[in-house]
Image (tube, rainbow, N blue to C red; front, side, top):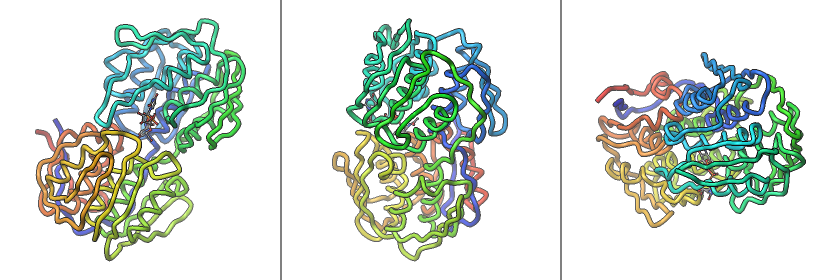
Length: 420
Ligand code: UD1
């Protein structure tokens, strides 16, 4: 199995180009199921999760031609409506095909996603909403079996909790439904906004885009034509590299980025003493003398993202003072804490609150990546640790970071990808 080997360094310098957003690409690829034409998608990241979803679509009978950072997807040849366990077990976001397949074909089976490293992550809200739209849903032999032979019917949906993939799934289901669907307490993440904007520009009228109340005007079962589009930049990848700049006290530029998607992340970095220069699509972080402690609570967009919690926890180990980081979205998203402790971090966990007492001298050792964002926290810690850090199980990183080793190497990191 591959692992990453990093040496602690003095500083980074240069520019990192940000890739397309994984979490935007996944629903956008699932959205192609609603189309009757073949669709060109530009700026896709080279990450394993994208390959997994394209493989799922291929298994259903679609054709997917992925070259460089572009894919052409033709779903007009789909004959199967079952997303099997072997794929879903590797990626929970496979659930994103449920809404579009069901609304287009009147039937869909998706292996029930199990728990995962960061918590239970149920899909009950997706299923309840589809039932409200007229689908019959049963759980049999580990599969969600959904049917709506006469199509789905638009209706009011109120999500008990804000769910990102749940909102995307129901927006896609509602796109081909009969009548209008109003989703209250919808997610407002930029990735959901892009999905809505593309549907809205291609024949599915959606009101309230970017707000917590979306009204989707269904096409009464008619598939749509979708024109070529470009995936938005990955705000979590961008935030991770800004943390790399902050933790190493470096001057680092990230390019091909959308600064307005990073508001809460930049605000917390500023509180920690960082300063920035921005253009329309670049952010340069300037070296700071000292890192200040911070208080963070993860919440839904536009508040501070749970997907940046682990990276800020690593950064807080280098702050002068006590930082408090509260995780509100996922109950088990502190798996990186024990690995950071093994590197010398002084972190106390009390339920969903981590208290980091900095500044800690970290030292390199063997550590284990436990989930996608936890892995990047270990990379950040390794950049400033004394000596060599070996990060194992980096298949987690490969799921969501496009060419991380190459991008960090280009700005001066001492990083190698090796095999056990
Ligand atoms: C998405 C992101 C993930 C991010 C998360 C929160 C993708 C592919 N993944 O995950 O990177 O960390 O948003 O920003 O975009 N919940 C329920 N029932 C449901 C659905 C969700 O109880 O049916 C709960 C979850 O357990 C969690 C909370 O709602 O506590 C938010 O989860 P959700 O927004 O659905 O996360 P994902 O869409 O899976």
